[in-house]
Length: 368
Image (cartoon, rainbow, N blue to C red; front, side, top):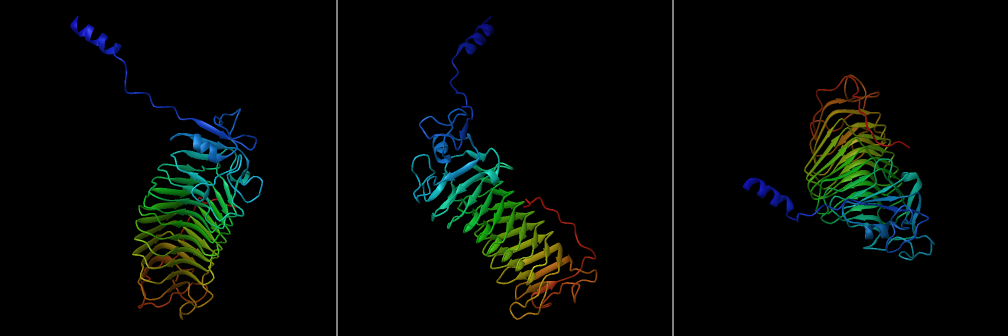
């Protein structure tokens, strides 16, 4: 009887732990209007900025097709129903929210034309910008397209297209654990840059026609490049200043150089395909210790670099270990049709064993 009464008493006590608030979905559309309570399907917001202001952590913002930014093209942001300006960017994601489009990047444009501002600045832990087939096009910024900054951790940037920006996609700051995947960078100064102190991953992206690097690394921490494609950039993949760079299953085609080492600590490339790059498939310089394995060097090198002869793999003074590499012919490096290798015994420490046939290297990077 005592036990029964105690059980009943406990059941009657008020619950004070609280119930987690259910995540909301806020709507943004070209036919919407910004207001104190916009965001429903029947009364969507007009600007992404207003929806972020109204959102709480964990919410999702779904953006309809159309153009977002300076709506009247008068060179001033922040007017009625327009984006920003906020912290030097057209859009700032400063909450742990997901921002995605309803119809994809082709239909959903963030227009940064005429502004010396970032397109999208992300400063919140766990924020997400875009999703597979639900991203955005960031267009014509004299600054950068999408930039992860500050102490943010665990940010995901996916399914977007950046055109004619300074740097299309950047992961920097003192945080880490960021993932930049399934994006396209076209005709930017830099395609994808990883420089966060805690490390980041660029996975299954396409960088095409960058005037500088397609993919670049810097900063501290381990920066990873997995399954990306660099096409017709100045440098396909460039490792400058970093603690560790790891490349797995990447492809560089038609760049000036496919992969260049710089002044970092160690660079490891596995399953790397350098095809038809104009000057070099792989070029090591600076102080980097580079290792290249299970990779293909095919049809690279038509111009000398640093006084060296025309080579498919060019190195200066740092060590470059190239083992189990297919050089374009079963016999290994040498004259055409194989790629050659420079400075054996000076910078290149290993070229054996060589692979007798090319490796199959597949990526899931977006296509045109």
